[in-house]
Length: 124
Image (cartoon, rainbow, N blue to C red):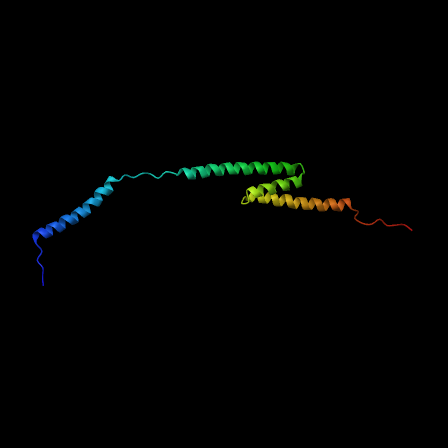
């Protein structure tokens, strides 16, 4: 069975379709493009990172001055304390390892030098 669609119904459907197509175009054209801006949190993180690198640079410099003066045990303690505050820093870890190894080597050398290498030969 075939339905007859009246002219009024056809024009109503066409009007609704055109209105549905026209309204989104109006809404889209009314919107303006806003360029994205860097959030304040990102800027704060970059400033904090710069401050952190300055802090770590100061810690490395102080440890290096202890090394230069031959205070390896103090340098080791300094780097250990710094690593507790900044455990992820590889430069601090490397300097800590160097101070530990140097302290061990110097300790071994000093123990060899201070103890006699061989027993004196007793004469009859």
